[in-house]
Image (cartoon, rainbow, N blue to C red; front, top):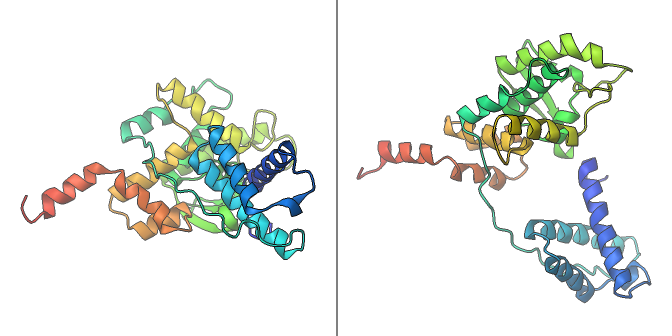
Length: 281
């Protein structure tokens, strides 16, 4: 917790360490963490690769192990940092799938007005698309995070970093309709969360995923999840001429290199720039 990791990140790291401990016991290393050394760590990571785990997941396992081994050595649980010479596997950066304007409109129009949770689902989809929120950020959003006067949403992201996002009129109107007409009916006991389930409990990030997947399927769209809307948000901001640093702030990226990935997605803007400014068009 001292590093400011989110609960989801902590849960993932705990799972990585359980995998390491299970592998050690299976290999006959039952004496505890002090038996960790470089060769055994490499053996564990190789077993993950042999089991078909993707490179990005192995990279996260490696990061978890490096942090843990540094802590274990500093706390005296191990004689030395067993991961000191452990290198991070290289990951290929694949271009994200994004929705065009027409497909995004299909998704936003997919919820059935006759459905009980129609207003909630519309507000949630509008917010994910208009603000580029992560699923966990949308699930944890407080009811008082919306400032309709200024037209912004206050979001608490990774590392407890706050950012202020302008979201536009359609999103604000959708949230207002949900907050005034449906949320009071769903509310069973006091909670500060904005988005509630049918039973009145705050939604989880899993529920956010399910909402997006369900309505994407109804709209005839494939391979669409909350991060697709985040990718689309970022790509369309850059296509519209937004500065890369501004988009970095809007997404809450610590590393500009992560945001730069979106500059490779919008080929239509690249073609336009070349047509207008190339010295030999």
